[in-house]
Image (cartoon, rainbow, N blue to C red):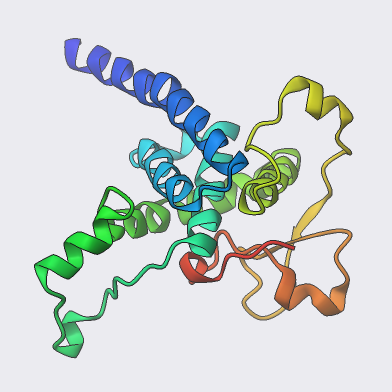
Amino acid sequence: GKLRRCSVALRRMLRRELHALLEQWNNVALREREMSAACTLFAHLAFVYKHIEEDEIDYQALSTLLCAQVFLGNNHTFDAEPDLASKGTKRSFKEEAVSDAALGMPQTELFEIFARHRCKLLRALEANPKQRNEAMEAVVRTVTCTGPRVLSSSRAANELEPRSWQQHAGFRGLGRYLPDTTALEAATSEALTPLADDAHFEGGAP
């Protein structure tokens, strides 16, 4: 019916037109190393996919959400504590407003998005190794500001093939990924952790 058509049109506008505009601005911010602006733009790029269903997750959604989570985990200071209430502590409205204004949205909104999609993204990564390898290389490029999420055709032609990324073996290895070129003894410190439980704060680049 009409409601369904409106829903489809809205999703198309968010995931095509708005995504393209935000990413264009974000590529400039990454190139200029404007970290605060890039954090804000990554937050809004993640928000575009807040309501995405598992069967809708394509490479664009997968790599965008991963890049956003790891970039923000490395470059934004999250100071919201979910268990403040249980500790009898409450931030003032002014403190909350200042903190949320940095990203243009409540920090808890981002926590919810990343938590909601964590298992979906993990299944998508495990189901498609080729996309997993490309997505992880995109994470490395964006978090180190050495390139955009999607390379231009000319640059892509000159790039090496993506490395093979596997989950870190051992205790708490789920959601932590390592490239095949990383030495085993350095695994703990060099794993990308886009889908680990504490990935908001621990994401890192090899």
